[in-house]
Length: 324
Length: 291
Image (cartoon, rainbow over all chains, first blue to last red; front, side):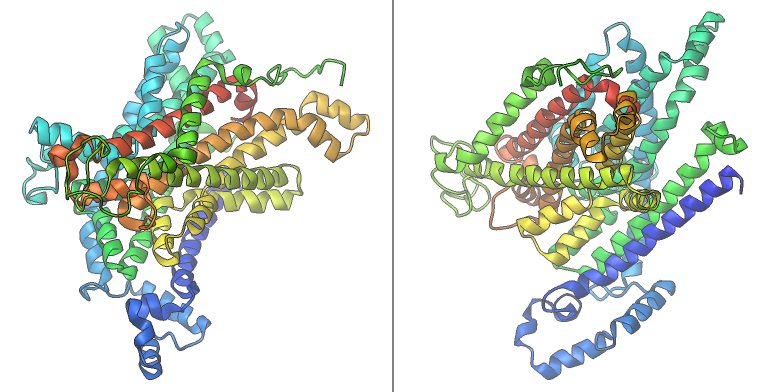
């Protein structure tokens, strides 16, 4: 099998394992509790006061009186038909809640990841180039700072500054949403800035150290000796090679930003999955939380697969199947 | 050993803390020590535990009530001081467990049989791909809010990256020239590990520990901020949860309610980060080989 195909199959198996693990976790968690699934799937906190017959009736209603194997099969069958259960809070199908919220989260995460990548890599390359002149430590310090700030708190600070004090930007929600394409970016600005700022550090640090390593490598020395102009040297010879390890960060960052989005959305009352999760936690609405976890796992896997596909674009060795 | 080690990348000479940390690292270690002391003795210094109301709702700051009261009149300064313990404890405990896991799993993958390496590293990839926070939320919601469960959950989701680093470090040490020599002279694996490889891998444990602690402090605060904290123990994340639910950062109380706990988290993580970056810089030859 050619190298590229073997790589693709390997990644495919890995992604399927991730999904399988998420499914199993979702199935096991509600059933692993002392007191059994009755507490979380059935009647809430006051199970103790129910009579034995009532408990049996609820168990039967949710199919929890069957064997674990049967329960698992039913669970999978339901998932295949996109039946994610009903919300505890208002009985609305979980799928509807998710479908409504998911695009908002994807919009937030998507714009943040593009921005983090572009800004982080640019600054990182800059920092790497400047290292030789003993500069760029200010950048390093800021990267460390933004890496350390909890995203939700940074969001609060930005709201206080740009919303409450300066009155420049809206501080919550998305206004009219899709119906107001002109007002939407203003609403998105603060949440996206929050998420981008807290995600920058990783890209910056990895690009910087990768750039430093590449700049002292033989092929750069050779290109410099050939008289390749500096701009071309940096763009074509150094940055392109330096991007390889950054790509790995991109994949980890997707998961990080998805998690960050959950807390940042809460701060900004942004109508995505983070908001759904926050409300679900307050209402102890377990099916909603589980569905959010599952959907976000699928989203992360899909984004990783896309990132995988783009890897071949920057690393010709993957395309041609040459050994590294 | 009396003869100097002829390895191309000698470990940092001397074992002095100053030598290992450098100026920035010492600043980080200093700040972290202050925080540790605050976590240990802080609760003895404040007059109440920040759990029960002691003043009017939204009380203004006054002597003895330095940051005023929250929406039900709980002492915000006491919450800040007492909260140090919970936040740091989770960070340090998770980091200890993660470092031990990473050393065991990474070491086993590096020197164990090939199939073990394959199994462990595929497992690490899978854990790395799972979205951590959403999973933590679901698990914490189901399994409860006790600090032990919290630590176990955070550790189970955080070992994968560190294990990869340790594995690479051990493998790089295992194939270095002076270990080849020692092996050729008949040293067994245990001797190689304790007398030789440990000098290369040992320093790696510090950044691994520090990074795990940074991640745990922020993840723990995030969970508490989402309302999954332990309601009986004050923590910085829980203070921020209540500040956020009451919209305190839009009121005059912003500087005394949401600001201090957020700053405390940031300062803690920066202090750890300074230690980590400083040590990484010192052991750079090792790290460069690892990457």
